[in-house]
Image (cartoon, rainbow, N blue to C red; front, side, top):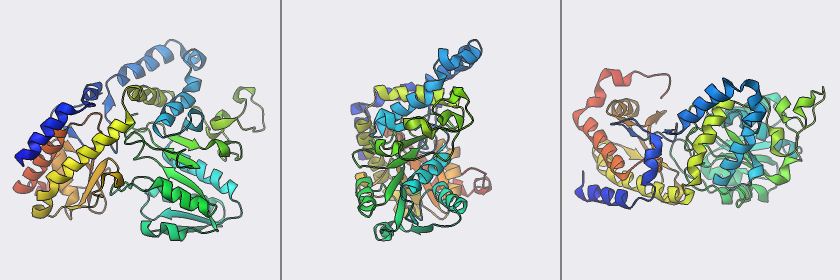
Length: 413
């Protein structure tokens, strides 16, 4: 490893204004966690909060906790905290369900607002669940829509006066490329279309500016950079101007104006509550609510700046491995053009990643040949970054990745 890089990493750690946040996470010893873009690490105070919800609130207060411990308000409370991270008003975000279900909700809401238009545009390389939901909605509606799934470079030309909705993910899950939310939203709206943004790899990684970009709808998850835990509740955003103009399609009782009146006919609640459906997931929301408390002290702008520095250092350290071992960086070099991850292609990427995980550096693999490294600035150090590259270099030098067990494909990659 280049001694200048090692010195630089040490200096960056000394000057790191976010370094103290590392102690607020429970991180296993001797492991370098570069997969926060798939599952965030566990905040140290979350277990006690969840234990209290189980032992005291559920165990002792029982059903009275819906009022006594404000379980019923968790979707709105958690949504308001997330709103502060994504550039929205507190009454424009609610935490509920999962990302896929929320795509379904907002897509059908948007289509209601453009009933005369019959084209849905998306990136062919968008996260598959988004594309699958579009296909499912089209089937539900009798295949009346033209689905224009195009390459990213062709998005603007795919938009026309027949377009109802443009659905995009701000950060590409494979390459880490960050799309221009402001420009693409403006382009869609210029032809009268509505725009939906998936923030799964954005929220908690850098400042998202939904209202500044005049976004119509957005969705995202709670378990990546928001550190809400595996399967944490997701969230959805609906701009104020649209909230009373659409009727939800998933008309569950929690979205009713008076859920405890138990009337037989549906009447939508006001505001974002109408976009909820069933009973809130109290334990999941409790964990996410607690995890979000970290953002009371952490600056999302400082997180973005550290992300730029971490990913830049990693990419520079990886350059010799690209030349020697055939890694090819597919992540944009310009910091503003990427999210908080770096990805490389390699024909033996799966086996290499399994060997690296066995060596204590946890990243992940995305088919067909991408090894991904996610950088969560709140708990990752600059020395961690260089140590990860050193361990990868050793794996490549020794050929350790060629051991047969590293080629056995598991259910989750």
